[in-house]
Image 1 (tube, helix red, strand yellow):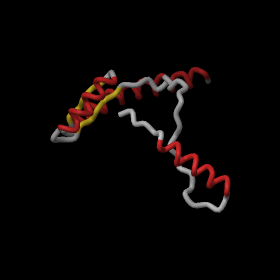
Image 2 (tube, one colour):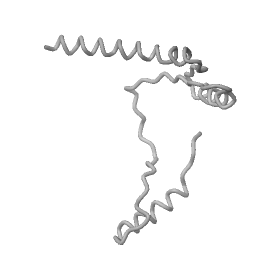
Image 3 (cartoon, helix red, strand yellow):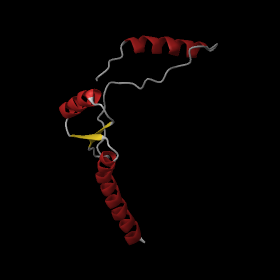
Image 4 (tube, one colour):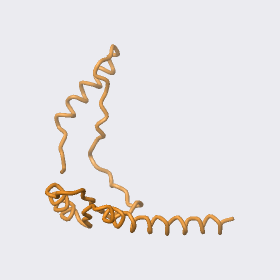
Length: 107
């Protein structure tokens, strides 16, 4: 049965590759302006171009789904309840409110 799983994986990978190739072409066929990017600078320029565009713009960024983000000093912005009668929740909210003040935007 290993051969069947492998065949499915190969077929799935080929379908995924083909789908990636078709999405920008499909967007263009519907009248969208398509911009390909490969670097952060390309992305920044594409965003500026998209803001000036008079029509729908699709920005294509090729990524490797297997590449993971390395560890970093960050946190997800998941708010703690604003109203609670539980002291631990109130303290957690105070900590959250202080952390929000130190948030930084990267784009």
